Image (tube, rainbow, N blue to C red; front, top):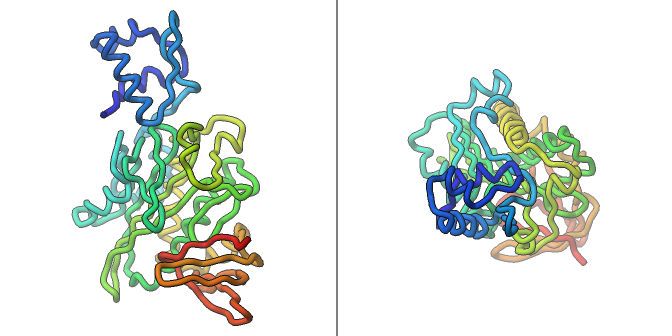
Length: 324
């Protein structure tokens, strides 16, 4: 069932709104308002209904606006960005860019208030409730071959972590290859989709899912420890400002990577690295390995000491778990 964006915008201030007043503003019956409220609940937005007072959200909600997001970009980033889309709902922001990549020769970015089929790595779903978090994807063109972009996920992780640190988040970590964590809890994830000829050029869609204000009812469905920005900072985070700063940093990062590769990002990565020195178990479709992490190689591959033998693992279908 689709949701009513106008109703959500009316409730976004966090105050009480009577059913009669909402019905009048929307030009519908009170019964239709009741149904629309239930549709919001089905999309992950908790709505309180109090007899005699009306409907309200547990807390104010900031909806995304393209102009507000673009206002966060530097002139340099604005020049490089060819288009920004903000959608009420998509199956996946990354899938949307992948479907349209052939029609867009330049750099495009896309956000959605909600994803119906958000993706994590290795086919996992990315929980994407309406209006609470950030789901951002960026399409970038590289002259290099896909093989030379093995470290791009690390650079993107550094970009996200730097933005969050600038927003006041202390104690951030990066878990190879693409998780942003805080005190062992997942805060954000990054997923890359590469397309191109073996010798180049290629296009890359980088998707970032960031927990800003995850509803507890939705968070209960996540199968690993997690947290969100509002919990960490103890105050509401402005989603438009955060989304704009993420977009700015990703654009600058990809431009730098295109010119200089992973090298400028290795030291920042090591400063955020949470796995070096730990014993982990790696799994991939064809097998597994357990060993002690010895950092990352210059191309972004994970260095793993297995029974005294150094092995290297590249970004892809590899899952990493700390060994018990």
